[in-house]
Image 1: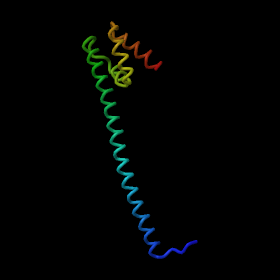
Image 2: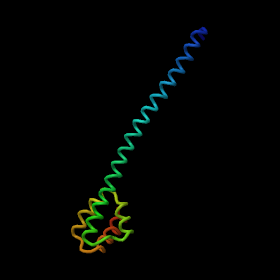
Image 3: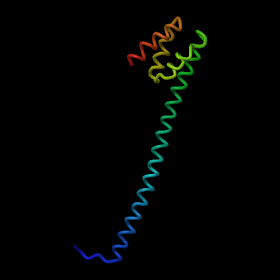
Image 4: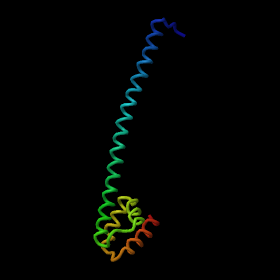
Length: 110
Protein backbone atom coordinates (compact mmCIF):
# COMPACT_ATOMS: atom_id res chain seq x y z
CA UNK A 1 0.00 0.00 0.00
CA UNK A 2 1.52 3.36 -0.99
CA UNK A 3 2.36 5.90 1.67
CA UNK A 4 -0.18 8.78 1.88
CA UNK A 5 0.95 12.03 3.45
CA UNK A 6 -1.13 14.17 5.80
CA UNK A 7 -1.53 16.76 3.09
CA UNK A 8 -2.87 14.16 0.67
CA UNK A 9 -5.30 12.84 3.30
CA UNK A 10 -6.55 16.36 3.99
CA UNK A 11 -6.89 17.06 0.24
CA UNK A 12 -8.86 13.82 -0.25
CA UNK A 13 -11.18 14.66 2.65
CA UNK A 14 -11.73 18.18 1.34
CA UNK A 15 -12.35 16.78 -2.14
CA UNK A 16 -14.91 14.32 -0.82
CA UNK A 17 -16.69 17.03 1.15
CA UNK A 18 -16.71 19.37 -1.85
CA UNK A 19 -17.94 16.57 -4.12
CA UNK A 20 -20.77 15.69 -1.76
CA UNK A 21 -21.81 19.32 -1.48
CA UNK A 22 -21.79 19.78 -5.24
CA UNK A 23 -23.69 16.51 -5.72
CA UNK A 24 -26.37 17.50 -3.23
CA UNK A 25 -26.74 20.93 -4.83
CA UNK A 26 -27.03 19.45 -8.31
CA UNK A 27 -29.46 16.81 -7.07
CA UNK A 28 -31.68 19.42 -5.43
CA UNK A 29 -31.64 21.57 -8.55
CA UNK A 30 -32.51 18.64 -10.79
CA UNK A 31 -35.22 17.51 -8.35
CA UNK A 32 -36.80 20.96 -8.26
CA UNK A 33 -36.75 21.25 -12.03
CA UNK A 34 -38.26 17.81 -12.45
CA UNK A 35 -40.87 18.52 -9.78
CA UNK A 36 -41.89 21.77 -11.43
CA UNK A 37 -42.21 20.09 -14.81
CA UNK A 38 -44.33 17.28 -13.38
CA UNK A 39 -46.46 19.76 -11.45
CA UNK A 40 -47.13 21.85 -14.54
CA UNK A 41 -48.03 18.77 -16.56
CA UNK A 42 -50.39 17.49 -13.87
CA UNK A 43 -51.92 20.95 -13.48
CA UNK A 44 -52.57 21.27 -17.19
CA UNK A 45 -54.14 17.83 -17.34
CA UNK A 46 -56.37 18.55 -14.36
CA UNK A 47 -57.36 21.88 -15.90
CA UNK A 48 -58.32 20.23 -19.17
CA UNK A 49 -60.39 17.62 -17.36
CA UNK A 50 -62.17 20.23 -15.26
CA UNK A 51 -62.75 22.44 -18.29
CA UNK A 52 -64.09 19.56 -20.37
CA UNK A 53 -66.48 18.53 -17.62
CA UNK A 54 -67.66 22.11 -17.22
CA UNK A 55 -68.45 22.41 -20.93
CA UNK A 56 -70.33 19.10 -20.96
CA UNK A 57 -72.32 20.04 -17.86
CA UNK A 58 -73.24 23.45 -19.29
CA UNK A 59 -74.37 21.92 -22.58
CA UNK A 60 -76.48 19.32 -20.81
CA UNK A 61 -77.95 21.90 -18.41
CA UNK A 62 -78.95 24.06 -21.35
CA UNK A 63 -80.63 21.09 -22.99
CA UNK A 64 -82.23 19.32 -20.01
CA UNK A 65 -81.80 21.62 -17.02
CA UNK A 66 -79.41 21.09 -14.15
CA UNK A 67 -78.38 17.46 -13.84
CA UNK A 68 -78.62 15.61 -10.53
CA UNK A 69 -75.48 16.02 -8.41
CA UNK A 70 -74.51 12.35 -8.67
CA UNK A 71 -74.48 12.58 -12.48
CA UNK A 72 -72.47 15.79 -12.33
CA UNK A 73 -69.89 14.05 -10.14
CA UNK A 74 -69.69 11.08 -12.50
CA UNK A 75 -69.03 13.41 -15.42
CA UNK A 76 -66.36 15.29 -13.45
CA UNK A 77 -64.56 11.98 -12.80
CA UNK A 78 -64.33 11.06 -16.50
CA UNK A 79 -60.96 11.07 -18.23
CA UNK A 80 -60.37 13.36 -21.20
CA UNK A 81 -60.95 10.47 -23.58
CA UNK A 82 -64.21 9.55 -21.88
CA UNK A 83 -65.33 13.19 -21.95
CA UNK A 84 -64.65 13.33 -25.69
CA UNK A 85 -66.68 10.16 -26.24
CA UNK A 86 -69.55 11.50 -24.13
CA UNK A 87 -69.38 14.83 -25.96
CA UNK A 88 -69.99 13.03 -29.24
CA UNK A 89 -72.59 10.65 -27.85
CA UNK A 90 -74.63 13.39 -26.17
CA UNK A 91 -75.48 14.78 -29.61
CA UNK A 92 -77.65 11.72 -30.17
CA UNK A 93 -79.27 11.69 -26.70
CA UNK A 94 -82.88 12.71 -26.17
CA UNK A 95 -83.11 12.62 -22.37
CA UNK A 96 -81.02 12.62 -19.20
CA UNK A 97 -81.79 8.89 -18.98
CA UNK A 98 -79.63 8.45 -22.08
CA UNK A 99 -76.76 10.16 -20.23
CA UNK A 100 -77.31 7.90 -17.23
CA UNK A 101 -77.33 4.78 -19.43
CA UNK A 102 -74.18 5.88 -21.26
CA UNK A 103 -72.36 6.57 -17.99
CA UNK A 104 -73.42 3.23 -16.55
CA UNK A 105 -72.27 1.31 -19.63
CA UNK A 106 -69.19 3.31 -20.54
CA UNK A 107 -67.64 3.75 -17.13
CA UNK A 108 -68.05 0.09 -16.23
CA UNK A 109 -66.52 -1.22 -19.46
CA UNK A 110 -63.64 1.29 -19.74
